[in-house]
Length: 53
Image (cartoon, rainbow, N blue to C red; front, side, top):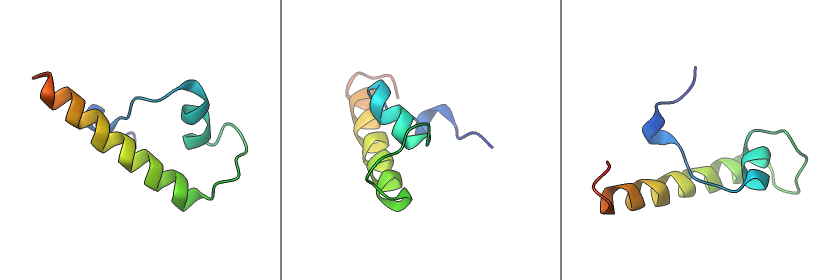
C-alpha cells in the first residue's frame, strides 16, 4: 500500500534511491526510516508555511 501524498518527503535522487532500497548504503533500514520520517516532517513544515498543507 502506498502512503498518502501528505506523507512524502522531498529529497535528492541519491537519498530517494537509498530510502527505496534501489542502492546499497551504510545505513540500516531503521536509520533510513528515521531519516525519511525527518524528511516528511520538514517537507510538511515547508508546505504548511507556504499555505499548501
